[in-house]
Amino acid sequence: MTNAQKKTIEREFYRYRENKQLAGKFLDDFVSKHLVADYSKDRVSGSGENGVENGVISAISKEAATGARARKWALVYEKTRDKYFCEGKDRLMQLRFQEHRSVCSICTALHIERRTYFYWLEQILNTAYIWAQFFEIRF
Image (cartoon, rainbow, N blue to C red):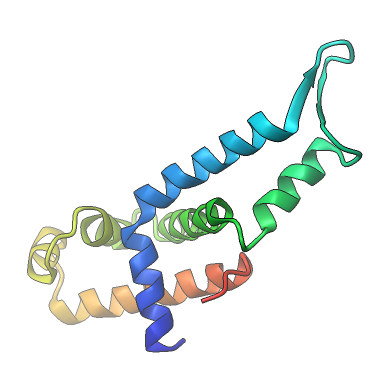
């Protein structure tokens, strides 16, 4: 992983709440534009020949759509946070990327040394990089 990729991951982690909100809006817009309720058959159907599932999956997988990219980055953040749940690293992610706290205040809050902080951050970024590859995000 290059330094540019690390910076991209960190930037997207800082934007987690914005990405989450944008992803939700993207899905709401897609559903309202492309899905029609068919009450005669008690199911929701797509507006074209493809089924609902195929339409949603293809819309989410398009890299060009800003909402799809935001959704993928939100998933990368959540999957990384879930991997380190109850290990202290999830708290580090919250303090650094959501509360924008300094290194010293994070180390004090977590009762860890500075070198442990940077070791954990490196692990977090490596895990996020793997998830980004899994979701086929281009850097």
